[in-house]
Image (cartoon, rainbow, N blue to C red; front, side, top):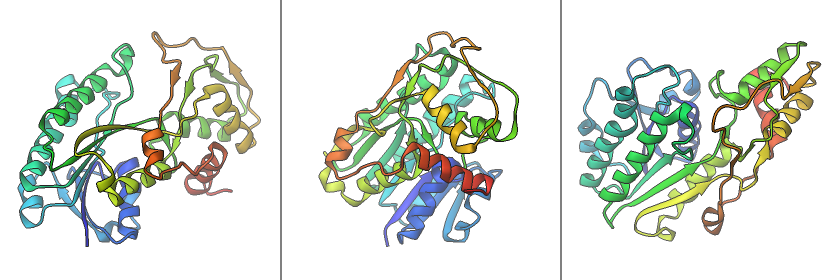
Length: 294
């Protein structure tokens, strides 16, 4: 049985990844805090071995048996006014210690969910800088015996995401309100990727490591299609049957708003991966799983 170690296992991405690995017969070890909420994993928690990183050393995980793969999904965005030191501790110091231990133990693959923002976007500067920092450490420290996949993940969405995120927030507003919904002009174009398509992308990497170059490599993980925020919101509005009025242009853009964010998934596609879930189907899945309706 192959062994995977997932950071951020109780989060949006981590819970979907853990559930899929368990169903495929992997032994899953999840790194979390002692205070983490396990509700996203209630159906598979008994099949996951949890390690509280604030209470035990990483050595306990690696000394018994080193995992075949580490999947690093934990992150802090700084949206809750966390100081830069806390953002760096989560996004640089912790994964760096994990990478060092993985290298010493001969782990074959380290998958890092990487950032796609630039420092021009000031609302997430601490997050962006810290993620870029760890990426460079990965480039520096990865030996030829390991495959470090720096997976640049574009705008994942799906069931179980935090209610404050853009997609669940818009769905909830469209469902619950007949009042006007104030929006920017909505010309920003983003590459939205359904969470299960992200999971299958990681499986593609895990199932065929020999097809990847040795050492450090960066791959884009996205659909390759950027849709406007206006189109995306209008799709949610239609699928939810909302009676609210969408007032595009009622709000200004943020300073240095990112107007185009689009992946180039050619390298992943060359490995046999293809995204399968359309925007409309993804929204319907969220409605069914998070809101209990078709």
